Amino acid sequence: MMSVFAYRGQSFAIGMSQTGSEYSVEVEGKLVSGRIIKTAQNQMHLEIKGIQQRVIWAKQGRKIWLHFDGRSYYVEKQAGSAVAGGSATSGERTLRAPMPGQVRQVLVQDGQVITAGETLVLLEAMKMEIRIQAPRQGKVARVAVKQGQSVEKEQTLVELE
Image (cartoon, rainbow, N blue to C red):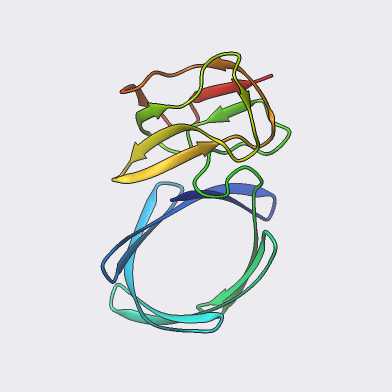
């Protein structure tokens, strides 16, 4: 699952996958693995590289406050990246690959009318499925990739009118 978050004016693609009790989190291509030891309301205890950490969070809409390792972070989930999306905000016309991968499925075609949040392209990267979703309602101007094609980070996938 990939989402795009803003922190201090910059956007970061963050993905998470789970296998049993083990979790992997990828931030801008860097992978960190660990496991959740216990959870409670708005907090969890993690073990990463043998070190236990307590993470506390609060969420209000797309805004998330996190506190761990003695530091606090305030991030905001970007519009159009709800489930696992590309790095486009609602005003952008170009949807790009958030990381290198392979196009598993193209779900739209040139000229097709789309709705906000609709999945346009499915990518596979590092054994994760990444859903590239429409940041807004509109029309597809151009699909720039084909099923089975390998893509690089920031490569254009779909252009909107």
